[in-house]
Amino acid sequence: MRAPFSFITRRCQTVGCWQQIAYLSRVSSNSRANHTSSDACKEERSYYITTPIFYVNASPHLGHVYSAVLADCMHRYKLLQGFKSRFATGTDEHGLKIQQAADAAGEDPLTFCTGISQRFRSVFDSCDVSFTDYIRTTEERHRKAVEHFWCTLRDRGLIYKGIYEGWYSTPDESFLTSTQVADAVDVRGQAITVSLESGHKVEWVKEENYMFRLSAFRTQLQDWLHKNPGAIQPERFRQDVLQWLQEELPDLSVSRQRSRLRWGIPVPGDPNHTIYVWLDALVNYLTVVGYPDGHGHWWSAARHIVGKDILKFHAIYWPSFLLGAGLSPPRSILVHSHWTVNGTKMSKSLGNVVDPTERSQDFTTDGLRYFLLRQGVPDSDCDYTDHKVLKVLNAELADSLGGLLNRCTAPALNPNQTYPEFCPMSFPSERGGRAVPEDYRMLDAVQNLPTSVARHYERLNVYKALEAVASCVRQTNGFVQRHAPWKLNRTDDGDRRWLDAVVHVSLECMRIYGILLQPAVPRLADKLLSRLGVRDDERKWSDLDFLPSYRGKECPFQGRSLGPETGVLFKRLESASGEKEKTNLMKKHTKTRQLNKFTVR
Ligand code: MSP
Image (cartoon, rainbow, N blue to C red; front, side):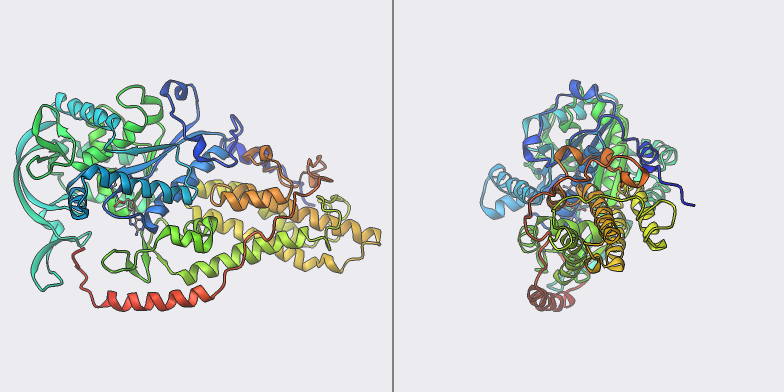
């Protein structure tokens, strides 16, 4: 005997989502609020997610969009669960390399930065990245925040004047020790020194700088990481940071001579020095929430999404600065790996940079989002090819989910265009009807789906959440295929009841999939739910009450008209572009192989 399921209440309590359900649908740029922190403080369940702020020395590429889409997905997921969520992104506009890029473009730095910052905004808009806050480090509010932060560190005795002598990588804006660099040869055959981590050229610098007492924070950082196992995720990155902390931390240079670096915020009280660009940039996370006034509540909810290349800055420098300024480290740092193209790092000089705008036009916004989120794995690098995108989207969105919707809403199976009746006798919770054991297993899987999706989202394993949904979609397709409702005879009462039950169950499954897919593919989920006739206010986490009729409860959808037919859910993509792509990539790959590992970019 099978117990009818009673999962929804328990499940939702696990992820703590019953209270304050917010209305998620169609989070748009209109919702970009100018939050006041006093309002926010009244909310109990708040979530503040950030992307890194992006350098404006080059146009946005697929890797940047990945960081942003990942953060967007988390933001939408939290809204779906009823949280007050804030999502910040923006551009990192100071520093030597930006100054050099503006010089090369023959523009004054601010005009140059404004142009590229706007490009990031438009790309994010075109990918439905629904940020609530956009920050530029050249804004006045940010200068004030950085100055205040600097003065706090200085007044607490954590900044002193010293001589910095060592390696500096301008592309990474990073100081490096002699163990972090290696000898190499550039493309012209000249001997150079490069960063072991990034491969970028470094130069020897000796100048009088302001230094931050980073060395004083090693034990506090270790304590923070030991006491907060979730502080850096995935775990392997927390282990990396703990490993780095096995060694002494050298004090950190936090200024450059103004004569070398014009483009940045001057050190308060000493106009001959410019604040180090990473100190400047990291403070953006505080600026957004109003620092130095009223930032407390939102700050306590802060989570940063970062690529693995900038972990040191976020997991060592940033928490030390914060502790030094009397603030707490972020709640968590969620690290993701990188996208390569045909196994090679994306770079302008290799000519293999993937343009997200172009790709979102080819594959649709949701197509690109789905691919990135479905294939992007936090732990290891992921490889991009157009051919792979085509395969994944055609299989999972066009054929599997789209095919299922098409079948169950087609007039042949659903002549009344309604959510048909579920007859418990033909699909009883105890065996005895026409349902077979696989059907019950499918119901169990869909019943448990929201719990596992929530668990995966919480750990930033969006790919696992989407895999779980895709697997259930396959099972529902199997269910329909198994019972071939198109072969049933509508004029026979028993057959008709069973046919209606099969369609009802399938529509219920799709309703659950639609709700759960909203954070990842909002437009596609909207189209799916609209076709099912699910209203905007019925798309929350609390609406994940799967198949109530099966438990003898009233189903609000039964008998309801489906929404209007608006065409296929996801149009199959032609393989012609895949062929073209293969050719292009092969050309690029050949070029790549000729280059040295330590190419100067
Ligand atoms: N400006 C700094 C961040 C300062 S945050 C206080 C920076 N900018 S960046 O533009 O170089 O990188 C921004 C983000 O994009 C980083 O998280 C980085 O890891 C990510 N990506 C850059 N290239 C990437 C891929 N190829 N793949 C995935 N993400 C990548 O660093």
